[in-house]
Amino acid sequence: MDEAVRDAARAVWEFDGARAWLEQARHHRMDPLSAEVWVLDSDFTHVLLVRHRVRGWVPPGGKAEPGESPRRAAAREMLEETGVRADLLPDPAAVAVRSYRADWSATLGLSYAAIADRGATLVAEADQPARWFSLQERWDSVFPEDRSRICDHAQLLASGRTAAFR
Image (tube, rainbow, N blue to C red; front, side, top):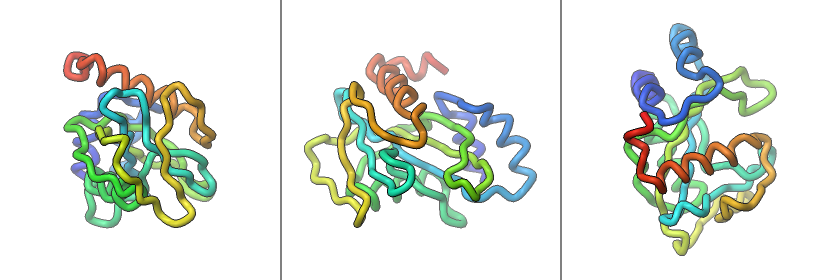
């Protein structure tokens, strides 16, 4: 949990009052903690998404296992769901509060960013294809705000201003 709190404080973007929510939530049981990766190409024009059976096209991600840091969970999920190995950028991209299932309470979600080769072979999980999308494209997702958030972060990374932004 300490790593999640540190990464939430370092996230470039904050949504849904996530830092204040986390401060309150850390005094209670919080399951599941989620982590995802905004995998971008080196031109910052495409994002790698996976087709979830319920959520639609979403960044690779999932819940952190007990004792696993959100950063490690994000890297593990990226590899499991896409076959892509890429270093996560030092600063988390975003922290948000959302509910991933109708029967789950809201939880903290940490989004990390990584730069990967768009030509690399994708190895998706069964029944969950992975695909590169142009940031100009629309994709179906239960989280429609993800597209603009990812696009904004890609523009920020392309400008090289992430350190100045904070």
